[in-house]
Length: 143
Image (tube, rainbow, N blue to C red; front, top):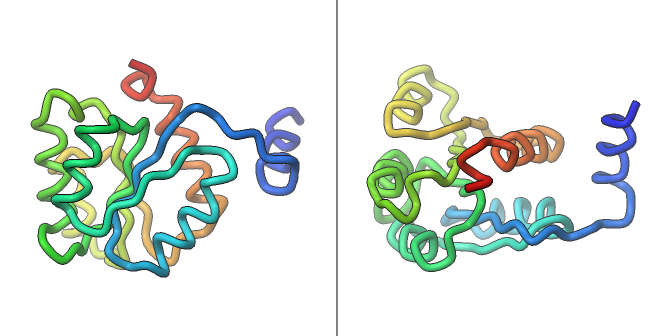
């Protein structure tokens, strides 16, 4: 019952913002606006429109979770993920790959580079909340 109340409150209750931060790396202004709209009630949200900008921001601000688009204008999501996982400052940050690709090869590529979770677009707010909640609860997100 507490879980149902918690979900209800998170969707319809008075928002209580935490001190946790999420970085959204996506070149689509529409998608970023959607994710920010869903998440900003509970989390501080940072935005980057390219892979390189996302990597720089992740190193500077060390967010608790990263939402990463597969297709970016400069680097592909798996490349960005791999760079973040090799960087000592960002290697433990959970990464959720967001993509319109729902092909097994793309999913495998994502997990091979170190992605922690994978969501196919169009993203439903409930799915996004659940994935972010799980990523924030992961031991690496707490360190």
